Length: 158
Image (tube, rainbow, N blue to C red; front, side, top):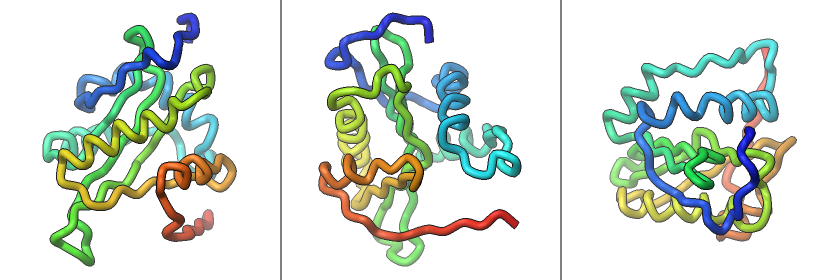
């Protein structure tokens, strides 16, 4: 990222279609992968672009971006579905969320999540689920915004 640091108070949040923002997300997605992806010997960076396009077209994908002086500096990608156990309830689960390390200061993370919450309300979502990695735990941020721990998930490479 060659752009100078912007005042994070001037960051603009917007909902952007996957097909429009994905090419620009590439650099951030690679940074994100390098920073947090588990089992990198197994999970090679290779997003299923066609699946994301289908979800976007179906209205079950929502990307809220953060831009400083027009430069993409962060995103939260939400997947929206009817809950399989409670079919009358729409639930949004984060697929990924990331802010470029140079912009991780102040309230930017809170504001990005708040922007996503506002969009989820517009889409009739009743429950928003955010996930965090144990090694990069954002639980304190989430709890500060009123979220509570829900599940503990385990993984094992086979």
